[in-house]
Image 1: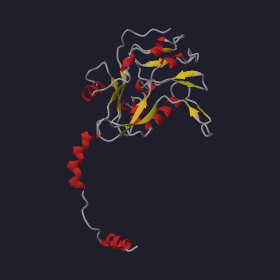
Image 2: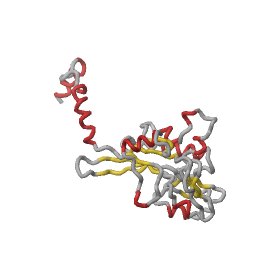
Image 3: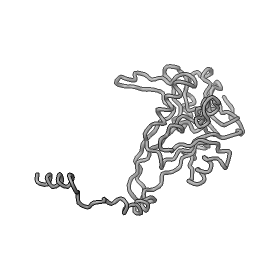
Length: 249
């Protein structure tokens, strides 16, 4: 069994804004691409063009329709990957020491050379964040793009996880939670960053920012409404003629 560090020098992780995520899956595709071409063994696919394709993905986006007690239903897009928990059960259950949590930054990784594919870490992870790669026979998981964030050959702006760099809506944020002045710490404090299933006691590092109720931005729409009125109440010119011609049918 593998021991967890009593504390880590830093706590690198993600803040995911559920109010901003549009469910475009750009983070899923960029994660698949980067981790297939770079870190560790490729993420394989089985029968990708057949009737029953399956594959290994380290990041997935689930979509749920949520009905608040008051107000209209909301569609919430929920990205999910490894949360790099402080009390990670996937680490302590590993019989070979392949799963471990780094002291220097708190990232949970898998040493694929030591992984025997027993699947105990997947069984112990309450978030379903580990996947067995059928082709390689080893367990795969989010690495926070450890091969990017420390790569001095990349421009400084690219030294962040691929999913964060790719997100077109700016819904994903990367930083050090041990620093109260970091962007992720401030976002969590200002927007009420939440743990995923805190009752399990895993102490996930990654945080989620809750979606705002739709009514909270209704006032902004009312303020802008006068500026959104049509310039002409009646169609003019060619479109006016076309509108009148179509009325005769």
